[in-house]
Amino acid sequence: MSPLRVSVLAYPGCFASEVYGVPDLLTMAAHVTAAQGRTEPSYETTVVSPRRRVLASGGARIDVAAVRPSDVLIVPGFDLPPGRDPETALARLAPELAAIRVQAASGAAVVSICVGAYLVAEAGLLGGREATTSWLHADRFARRYPDVRVRAESLVVTDRGVTTTAAFSAMYDFALRFVRDHDGPGTARATARVALLDDTRSTQAPYVDADLLPTAGRDFSSTVKRWLDQNLATRYDLSALSREFGVSTRTMLRRFGAEAGQTPLAYLHTARVRRARHLLETTDRTIAAIASDVGYRDPGTFTAIFTRHTGRRPSVYRATTATPPIRNDHRGREREALTTD
View 1 (tube, helix red, strand yellow):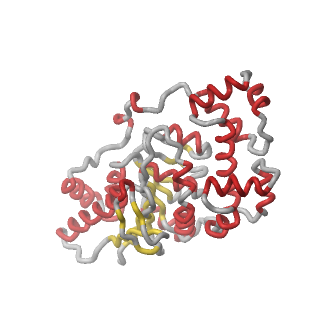
View 2 (tube, rainbow, N blue to C red):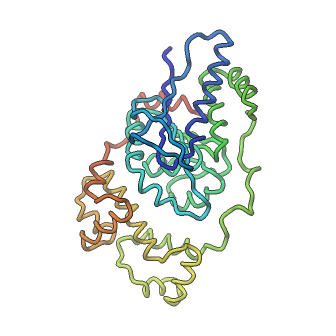
View 3 (tube, rainbow, N blue to C red):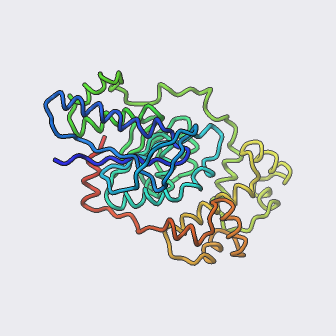
């Protein structure tokens, strides 16, 4: 049997340890199977990127190969301090999001580590699926992607060929399950012993530290954001927005700013651009029509705001990210079996 092709997607700002963690454990598993008499390698691992150069979080340089067809694509997490909006980081990763979509469309099983789930969700793979991520970010992730059924207590969740994991060390929980499914429980147990890993964990609940969770009391701004998300095309009017929530404009700006760290209008621009990116990637609607859909009557204004947020004009963004719709084919169902938990 030919080796399973496992690719890890490296990108600017990713955690280098999460790039190499799963491949390193698979190397240990290969040593175990070799000691058991297997002569052929079980896995072929490659670090890939749509870019020529990648600097990970902290400035570590990662050597990469071009993205190639794979059986499993692993998406590591990135540095996301509590309270920081992931939008800025995600807006710069259009080539990576496109690569994830292409790999999924070709039948690869997609796996995210920790907040790598944000990339998989932005790529459109988690809508209607169950998923997990770091407990520290699970609530904010659920608010950003309301169509994802977040299982915040879980270490590893697989739903129809897409796997997500909890924070950092959960990459090893995934890797051990992966070895168990591919090489058998004996090899997985032996690999865990060699690596000094706990292969009996089933939940991240014991690790939750309430003192580290984002500050409570953000209900007001969350409610306002939800209303803005549902009314993207509505003309922005601070007075009307304030009346909607029964406060003065001064109170609206003060309370929203204290909780969200920005103005309602700044958030609205971000939400509109996020929706516009999705429409550019997945539809053939004209740029003028998309601008109108998300609330900009002047396409020139839309282009300027979109470019400021993403670093690319809408036409360039579409040209580099638009991909065919993801399909569920026989190959995809075979890859799903590789990571079923």
